Amino acid sequence: MLREPLPLREARMPRFAVELARTAADVRAAQRLRYAVFAEEMGARLDAPEAGIDADRFDPHCEHLVVREAARGEIVGTYRILSPSAAARAGGYYSEQEFDLARLAPLRAGLVEVGRSCIHPGYRTGAVISLLWAGLARYMLAHRHAHLMGCASIGMADGGYAAAAMYRRIAAAALSPAEYRVVPRHALPLERLTAEAPAEPAPLIKGYLRLGAWVCGAPAWDPAFNTADLLVLLPLARLDARYARRYIGADVVRVPAAPCGAGARLHSAGPRGA
Image (tube, rainbow, N blue to C red; front, side, top):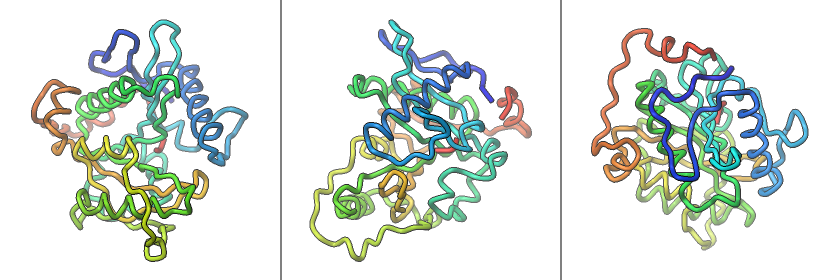
C-alpha cells in the first residue's frame, strides 16, 4: 500500500525534490528505474513479474523514497524503505534472506531496512544521493526509529577477489561491535580469495562509512545480482556531525522515544525489503 508524503517538509534543490511515492504510478516508475539499472545496466538476473519492472514480495510492504527531476517530473533516484512494523507483516526483513540477523533482535523495534538504491545514469553527480540521504534521515526522525540497515553490494566480475580485499580493508576500520555481528547464509569463501586485488570501496559504501555506519561481519554472496553483500548498520546516534548538520540541521541526532503504539499511528496509511 502507499504511504502519506514525508511528514516533514520536502527537501528541495533547484532541479530536484525528494518525497515518498504518493501514487501507484510513482512506485512503478521507481521499479522501472530499478530494472533499468540492475538488469539492463548491471546484468542482474531478476525474477521480474513483468517486462521492465523490478518487483518482489517485499515491495507491497515498503515505502518508496524517490527523487524527482523538477522540470520533467521524471523519477531519477530511489530507495525503498521497510519499517519495523512492515517487516513484521512481511514475515521479516529482505536481508534475512542473506544473513542470520539473530544478534540484531534487540534492535528490531526501531530497525528500518533500506535497499534497492539506484540513480539514473544521467544524474550521478552527488546531488541525487544527497537528497535521498536527507530524505532517509528525516524519515527516521519523524518515525522515531533509531537504527538503519541495508545490504551494500560489491561486484564480483573478478570472481570475488576485489570484494574479499575490500571487506578486509573495511573490517579493519569499521567492523561493528561483536553483539551486532550477523552470519551470512551463503558466505563468500574469504579463505580462498587471498590474491592481491584493488580494495578501494565503492562510492556508496564509502558514503555509508563516512556517515558513521558499521559493517556487521563477512559478506554474503547474492547469486541473482552476482555481488558480495555487506550488512551495513547505522545507529542514528553515530551519524557524523557534518552530515547531521547537512541533512537535518543539527550537530547531534537525538531520536525521541516513541510512545506506546506510535508506530501504528505514524503508519496509519497502511502496510520492501531492501
